[in-house]
Length: 307
Image 1 (cartoon, rainbow, N blue to C red):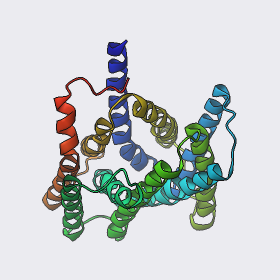
Image 2 (image 1 turned 45 degrees about the vertical axis):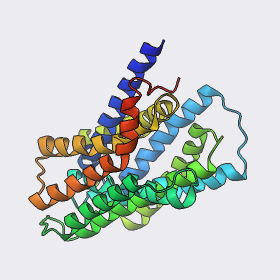
Image 3 (image 1 turned 90 degrees about the horizontal axis):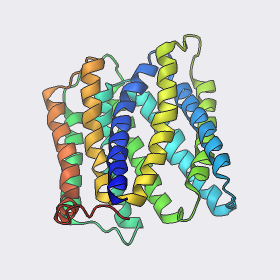
Image 4 (image 1 turned 135 degrees about the horizontal axis):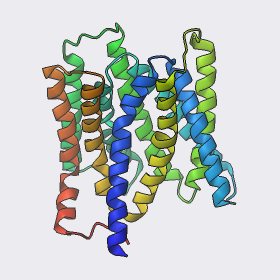
């Protein structure tokens, strides 16, 4: 039984890293013919339909009280609508590989917010050094003499970082206030609200005359909805129950590497030497921040399963 669970855990980690690492490429491909806010809204509408079906099959009867809707509205604003508006718009201005590196600041923001809002997760020396390394890398990237086709590239980079900060705050808030809530139903509500808000923003701010849903755009939308939003969500929270959180935190190190490789191979993107140096500091910061926990986990050998 233990060996069976271990195999499923390994497969789950591989699935999460591969899908999250490839979503940056999928977003970039979809943005060739679909406007950013429209693409993001449709992604969440489809994902919400799938979560609704899952919720019906599971037959959850948990009450939808004030705390449920407070958390759902917070997630809709700070996990889905505003952050993904920033991610999609930001990626329309910069390469997908660079966007993935900048979003890798997410765990640093989680550590900072956790220190101030979660008494059981204080700041440590390793986390502090990792944060310094990570944001030093971001500074080097911003300070580099970057040349992109878009004149709004710096704003695009800032949008990606801002999205990471918002989603980190939402995650910590969910850990603080979301205990005991049905994960499928609360994310269903949040994605639905987020999708509606994004669609309204698209309706009033974007021109849709040139929008085309060609084969690549449709594939991108389906992949991001089914795999990027639902499959990874269900897999990730299954992993939370079965594996040490240290291993999950290291996905933040692996996914940008996959995104950079895909951006280079498929989209022929390239990163300047200064950006590579900054990226190294960002990824190195993730390892530094997690190094004490990784060493502890290594000493435990195979005791990384929770059941």
